Amino acid sequence: MSTTTKPLPDTAPAPTTGRLDRLGIPRPLAPGFLGVLLTMTGVGVESNVVAPHMVAVLGSPEATVATIVTAASLATLVGSYLSGALADLLGPRRVMTLGVAVWVVFELLFLGALQLGSVPLTAVAYTLRGFGHPLFAFAFLVWVNVTAPVERRGAAVGWFYVAFTGGLPTLGSLFAIGAIPVLGGGVVGETGAMAASVVLVLAGWAVAHLGVRLPSGSQRTAPADEPAWRVLTSGVRLAATRPRVLAAFLVRLVNTAPEFGMFIVLPAVIAEDRGWGQQRWLLMTVCVYATNILVNALFGWVGDRIGWVRTVRWFGVVGSAVGLLAWWYVPQLVPAGSDWGYVAAVVAGCVFGCSLAGFVPMGAIMPALEPRHKGAAMAMYTTAAGGAAFLGTGVVAVVFALGGDGAAVTWTFVGLYACAFVLVGRLHVPQHRDAAHGDAS
Image (cartoon, rainbow, N blue to C red; front, side, top):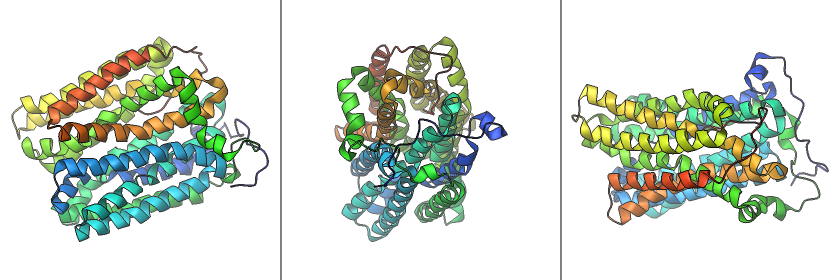
């Protein structure tokens, strides 16, 4: 633990005259945003190929692979919570390094276990690797909140999510599109692409670690007199005692859960059942999530004008439910393998990606619910962001285990959006023009 004797102030001075600062990116942290983009690109390389890859290499049924992915997603959930708590105790820089080290070590063990054909070793390595990337990325988000001026903090958080989702899955999928055929195609090319992802992750860490020199990165941000156990449990205690914080946590949890579930369900449907091939499936995901990135700022603007809660309820919850149904059913209704049918399926997916951005104001709602405990509230927010992967893959694992198919998975997610629609009604908060807003859903 750091020996710093006093916590950092709520904001650290940052230059405000440069172009980056006017855009909302604190200039001293600019290399960190690029580092997050590179690292999450590496993490995202496998996002749309790893499930069918494990099925092919291990010869295991889809339900077994879905369970392995769900276990890794649970580790991501825990890592997302620990990222904030450990950053408070040790400083963001150390936690970021720890996260990359965990990811790289267990990624290499995961690839080795696949070559050995060992299901147990693959499951252990892939699960433990899940702790890595949230420790890196969300510790940097803590650093952003410590450094950015209050008046630009929402914009800074928004740019963090542009970097995060720009890498995972958008540029990661785009890298896979080019790397898989170059490295041999098929299972061999997928293995090569995942091995190459280690280089991207390490490059991102190096850019962030060497490029950002602020001393705040190595300093404890929690109050010096607060015991470690209270820092580590602050978010959980807040959610347990504040029903509205718990409701907001659940809404954010549901937000992107279908994204991770469809990463398991749709690859085989689009590439094989509908005959468009793996390359077009990867290109589809690039289009869908690039759309999400492009409209995140728009929905932040909409939320400021018509209300955060109203934006989340109608554009986020209802829009995402409709878009998800379109993304599942449009490919089934158009002729398999047709070019115009593929375009229609991509458009349907982009409707879903666009609607996900309707959840952007949740980044303003969560801390506004508990203005005296913003740090603990944000810990629960990052936990929900990481936990969405666990919920999404868990739904697939449970539905498949019960004998359901892709349509059953899709309607289960629609049911979760219906629950979120009800919960959003409990999240009314005072909305001020200068409130911070913005996270990428």
